[in-house]
Amino acid sequence: MNRIMTLALAVMLALGISMAASTAAEGKSAQTKTGTVTRVDVAAKQVVVQVARALTFTVTDDTKITRRDEPKKIEDIKPEAKVSVTYVKEGETRTAQKIAILGDQ
Image (cartoon, rainbow, N blue to C red; front, top):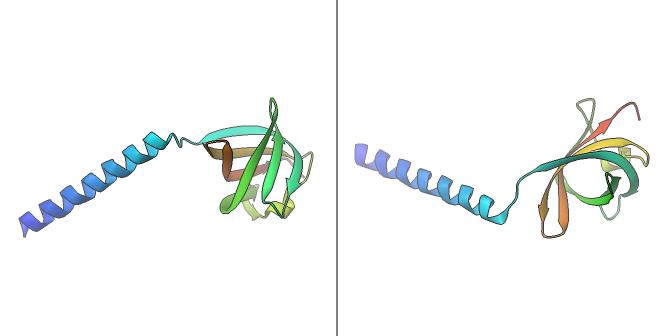
């Protein structure tokens, strides 16, 4: 019984290390930018935010959009809104994980 538990623990540990190494190798660390929305394209699921320059973020079904901790949709994001976007960058694509609408928009 101990041998089976030890083997199961070793397999889980190996998988965890492998997944961590894979994520690190892909360079997918989350970043956060805060700026002003200049454009929202609901159909393309994209939000353009002016930070030091305009950055386009792709919104997925997994992106969490909130205002004052209340769930919102991409349609609730309006141009001129202040937002904070947490995202990962893969190649040239910035995929939003979280978008927080700031202020009273």
